[in-house]
Image 1 (cartoon, rainbow, N blue to C red):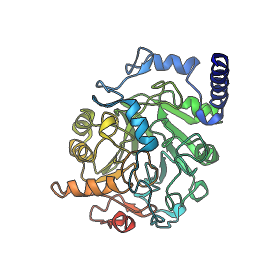
Image 2 (image 1 turned 30 degrees about the vertical axis):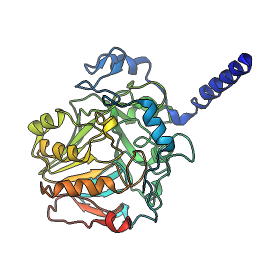
Image 3 (image 1 turned 45 degrees about the horizontal axis):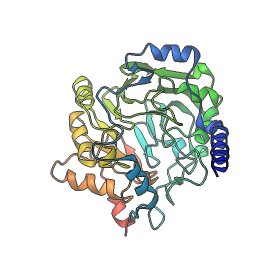
Image 4 (image 1 turned 180 degrees about the vertical axis):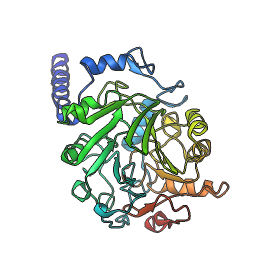
Amino acid sequence: MIIIVLVGVTILTVATILFMRQPQFGKAPSGKRLERIMQSPNYKDGAFQNLSFTPSLTEGYSFTKIFYDFLFKKIPDSVPKDKLPSVRTDLRNLPDDALVWFGHSSYLIRTQGLNILVDPVFSGRASPVPGFTKAFNGADVYNVADLPEIDYLLISHDHYDHLDHQTVKELKNKVGKVICGLGVGAHLEHWGYPADRIIEKDWDETVQLAPDVRLHTLPARHFSGRGFRRNNTLWMSCLLEMPGQKIFIGGDSGYDTHFARIGKQYGPIDLAILENGQYNKAWQAIHCLPEEVLKAAHDLQARRLMPVHSAKFALGLHAWYEPLCEVSRLNQAIHMPLVTPMIGEVVYLRDSTQTFTSWWESARQ
């Protein structure tokens, strides 16, 4: 019996190692890229670190209980019953100062004649394994073929719901430059992107996108990794700054003091795009709860808030519509102007009077 168990474990181990050599898992930084990483003030003891102590789980919670809940706990309405509503927009002819959201944390920004694409996931899943973590019905109505030529592809971090192997491969001939955190370029080079098209940045650096457009790479409170090893690449938020307008691109982040610091340095910010979804008190340090999303927007001195990271994948233990319902309910006491478009609906970045329907309310019926 012991021999049978050992043989079984050996076979499973070998199979796992071989499977994780597939290209979608990416590649760890090495050589000169790793040497540069090791010089970062945010890299210590062999890994990138958050600015504040960031536990993987909130005190009182266990991985065993969370794993059990993911496998066996019934979450009502975790997936929409029907096809989600969307708007069909000609992305190749967007007006300047416009944004189109594709669900979760993927969106296209058109400003100052530039097309900037953020964290695109068009493969229909947020997993390295086919058939797992599939996009909701109606949430994957756009694909790479619909996109215009992309001047800058912005990747906030290397998790599968933000850096999608299939999408990035299909985008390769459409993208001018990629901007990402330190180390993430190793994945991109492994997938065929030339090194001279990849701009890797640490926190608190600036990239000049055009004469009047700058991108500031800033901290976030999160983690990284596409395999067993965590935090060998850098996660980040960004501030897009152009004449008369500032947009905060939040990536994934738990609540922390960096929001107030960024607000003090760059505020007021015209639009804050913040993750609001796939949260849980068990992992509160790395994903904001709805009340913290509103608090972060206040800290950023935001004039408008666009909550994202929802309405495409079931990665948290809540109903698919809960994030938008909760942030809207809590906002009744605050009155922060919310930007909540349907997938594909055009957001006019300089029109602070634009209003949006509570489309998730009718979709949840």
